[in-house]
Length: 223
Image: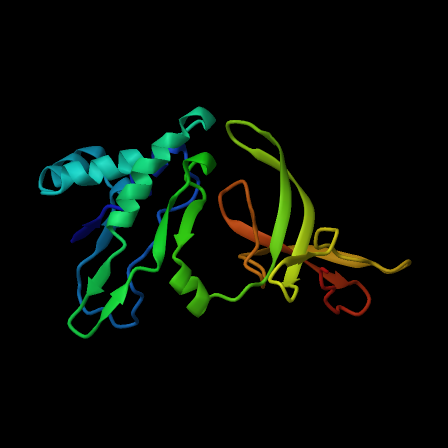
């Protein structure tokens, strides 16, 4: 049995009341090469976790990382980000394998501001230039924030750059336009849309909206 401890996502994230399950990062294979089972710490009884952690020769490092990367930081304590930035930079080296050497593309870890229901992603420039394609940018305003929710307003959107590399803002957020007399059906669909956007349901699952003409069934694209 292999026990997986994901910094900030296994034990610590659930302390924030996260509603999503612990991500499964192991490679998926139709024919497993091992009969060993992988279990997240958050899925085990506390006494079992304590026993397993006592056998972890890197326990102090793991616990320190969990603490630093999941520590709430107020606006007056932005200096605390320097520590996690330094930890991250120390680990962005070369991955040595038998076949080839490669580099880390970036860092992903749960966001304490979203109670571990979302992630912080920092991607290095070399990976962005080589592998990512721009889809769109959104301009939003945060109207209010409570302990359990964030209220936002979409202000503008952009889907391309001008010749100088500046975003071309459309002057409005992406939306559906319905002709006079046209009837449309809107459906909530599990998962993300074609641009990777989504909303989060009350039970912690991503979903997005689709629209279709009621008479023809043809999809109505948001523009």
